[in-house]
Length: 168
Image (tube, rainbow, N blue to C red):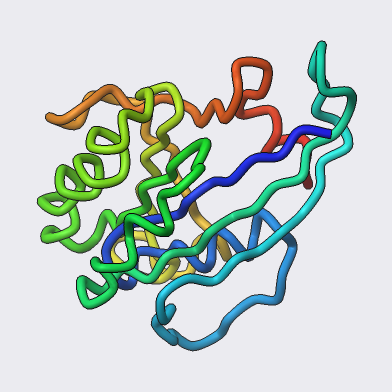
């Protein structure tokens, strides 16, 4: 069985925990409570296949706290990571400025391929111009954002975004 470690990183209040809970079908969180350090969620996807490792994949989603006070822990979190999902809140202008720092620390400095990185712009329901629309609104951004072309997470050559699509 394949194993994949995916980091969810980004600024505070960007929606990392909400996204991780959604993908692992964990409980919803109704009020904001900042992640302290890291929270590891595990799940399996039996629909992933590989030529040499059989069927299925065990995922570890590492929901990393966005506060800079945890920066000294980042090297330990990054060890053996297969992919990085950078999450930011599209409604907070400062988050747009921070994307480059997150990309530099978690992708460039770790020599992770861009194809193993995904940028997710999270728009909180009820904020901005679409008050009360969707209960969960995520937009996968696959565009050039001044630092890289962010493409769908590919945690292994034989695993693509379909891992997340097939999970639910």
